Length: 289
Image 1 (cartoon, rainbow, N blue to C red):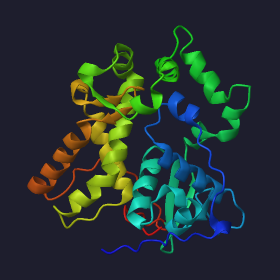
Image 2: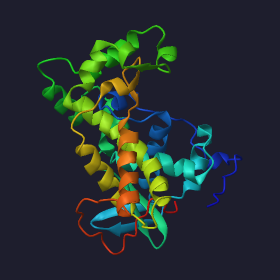
Image 3: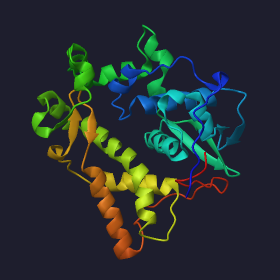
Image 4: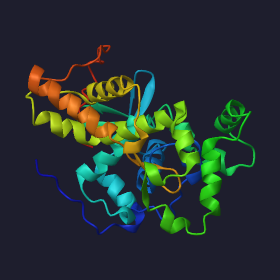
């Protein structure tokens, strides 16, 4: 399949002049996303809230039509000019329930996801803690949160710009980082990271092994169910930055191996039971956006 690259010549009226990333919200909520993911998220939310964009109402929710080209024009600084490049990032946001996607009449529409509020710009800029912050602090009342300690350690690091780019294996990681990733929250963060990676690689890998076609929701459910069945995560096979961010886990390859074996021996994926999708939603992992 050939994808067309968008032109790098962007009209000033299409470009977002000032970019903002709520780094604090990303760190405190343990979201496995980078600056590029965050900027695309904020761009989509801006389009969703713009009344000039085409809207469709379905299942009690309003969805907004957004073309992948619009994202490229809005954020030329990202250097992403191809459809697959944008889809890969958007799939990651959908896996984390930051964005929702639906297909209507072969056009792609978006809505804010269940977790979109975690990256709210307004709530984190105010002096008064947001509802999410208050709930988080109440849960961690007895001891300071590990994420908070990791955040403070990062700020105090004089070599922050250099160290955040350095990957460290289990043996070279700070004890506080490992302490966090042994907790339920840490294990969930690793699984979320693996899920986001799998959504970008699993569809292509499966299509090479079987003629069966799966929807985006089916891939999402399969990945979630398979990761949930993995009881223990081997931290010695994970890599982290000095700031405590997960950058690699063998869970991705492990789930990929399980899926490919099922395709080779059984002809396809063993999917969990799912409720039927509404007829008007024809979701597909490679839907046109």
